[in-house]
Amino acid sequence: MGKKQADAKVWFQRCLIIYFVLIFLTALTVWVFDPYFHFHKPFSFVSYRMYDERYTNDGISRHFDYNTIITGTSMAQNFKTSEVDALFGVQSVKETFSGAGFKELSENLERALKRNPNLTTIIWTMDFNSLIREKDYDQYDNYPTYLYDDNLWNDVSYVFNKTVWYHGVIPNIERTLRGKPSTSFDEYSSWEKETGYTYIMANYDRWEQKAPMIEGLTPEERQMVSDNIQENFVKLVNQYPNTTFHIFYTPYSICWWDFMNQEGMMQMQFDAEEIATKLLLQCPNVRLYNFNDQYEVITDLNNYRDKEHYSAKINSKILEWIAAGEGLVTKENYQKRLETEKQYFLNYDYESVFEQAAKGE
Image (tube, rainbow, N blue to C red; front, side, top):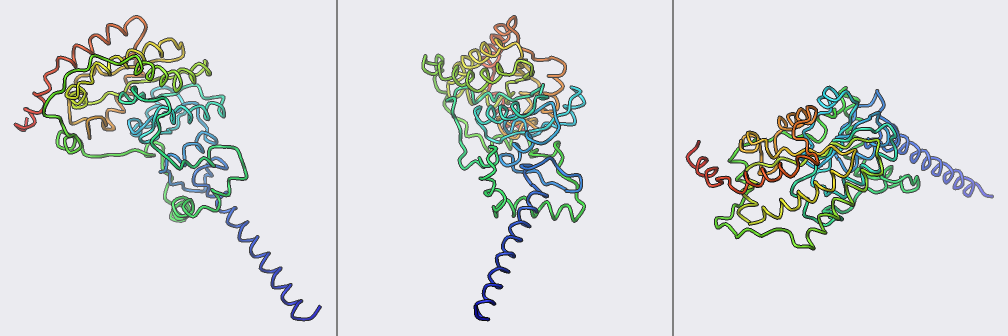
């Protein structure tokens, strides 16, 4: 072998070594700073930026120490684990999914329940406007499914992902070097926005002409609601009889009820609520809550940023209500509660809401 060939061989070997060293260092850096907790629980010497729910939540389920999960859509994002822990005497984590359908929430809980035998309590939003939907409803694509399974081979999509580095690894390194504390669960996914009539109406295109009231759900729609609740709630709940599921209908503002009234869909909503309630009350480990009789909250538009989303102080009230057993729906009281709800919202003077606001009252 000539000198040139020998030099080329040495050069190639060095390049190969450098290549594998760089791969090793890349993988090691991701493993250590692990922004989405895919490989291990948080290290005490690393400061974590928690922000991307669909990347982070599965890692929380895998590696954090907890016996309680708070879950739901954006209606649950302002819950504080510190308040849950104090009220219920538990160790909780928060796993919310903005805009999620029931299917996504159920599948995430199922993975958590399979992995954590100590998971005994779940606080779960049942979004009132999601009852009348197909059981497989989902509005998101391109989930990071490589984070959800136990296949080591597809973890290359995590370790060598420039987006993960840019949005996860590098911010964690920077926070750690600056000594900035990790995002707390009280802060994780939470939001604070201006509330009140002006902000609600900015996102509410109210029908000026009221539509005729639809008599109720068709047989096909009733079956759709039943399948939705059976598949995404009842099926999961029955698989874990030793876990208590605190499920509550999300209390929307009076403007949401006006929306249902103007579009003639209110009776459909009552039918859907009745179907869901009957199915959930068959599960002994479900504690179902309905706060639609919290009229002082619902009719005070200062509690809402749009016709559905309540402020953080209402999240705190909901936890207090659940801990105190307020709003609990039972086999004995659900029919009376539903009839009271119907009479209140069917006969409410909705025009007064907008007349008072126009006068600046």
